[in-house]
Image (tube, rainbow, N blue to C red; front, side, top):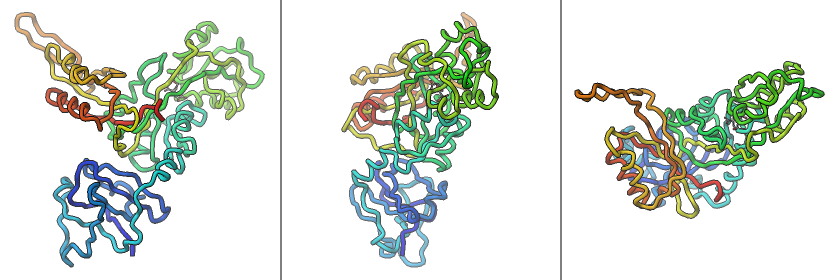
Length: 402
Ligand SMILES: O=C(O)C(=O)C[C@]1(C(=O)O)C=C[C@@H](O)C=C1
């Protein structure tokens, strides 16, 4: 006798932040505390489709016994759209197989990266791989061609997490990932700050002054602009820094160098011709950790909440939007704007002065506070009253506190 979930899990009553614990019968792996704010459709996952489950509402920890509570032969009502209206239909037979609640030991093993598969963009030796290993030291890293492939790998349950760069202290925001955050439905569950020390790599025996071309990721080329100008070389763009190192190793060209990490030099058998070649000694890249499920926010340590919103047109609307946080003494650690892609131009027709065309913007803001704090909930409620659109991208522990 086992507990089986056939596709969607049905429970009643569901309260926001109720927890679902899943146990994979094949691996014995215990699943996360899923957040049931929204309808959780496990059909997307082949892996979890045939696993056993118990659903615990946060308040009463009693899984519903279908055999006792439902009328034999009567199919329970199912409404995929509304979790709260569904009848309890958890398919289980053997209570001894019920998973135990997650313990601190389970959580710390996840924190250390045991069994966690983490996607990153680039090849082994890329800085993104180093960031994934900083976040989850024992994780299995999974290289992806493009940033979007890393998003998809998480969505398709090929990996558990993705670690992606979002900002660099020299180059600024990595807009592609801001755009992908909007297009996909993943949640930010953590952040990593990585010190990036670039090296100039060449074939064994190559000399720095023999180089005619240097290849790297565009961000890395931009971060080493001063040295590249001094060398007077042609810049060649690559998908990632490790990819550039691999290309130099495979090409066998002594006059082509790569900007990449010391680890990439080791992996691809290249010489380090110069190190710490970035324009500023302290070169930090900020990475986000993305997952399918949000984490349950707490107040036990400093948290960050990342949001994105757009506003109606009008005088002082952005001021008003930022005031909802200032009034509640919520510190903002970052604000960024991007043109609204699907509706970039707004024509304002003022009959006396002719028509004007403006870009419409979306704003990305990081709050230094947790969603678990009432002041944040009130501030977001307030913002929602006049924002055209508002989404919480994630609430996660600040890295300094990890
Ligand atoms: O090419 C890599 O190694 C990456 O991990 C990408 C990336 C980036 O996109 O900013 C990450 C860190 C450095 O800032 C340079 C490049």
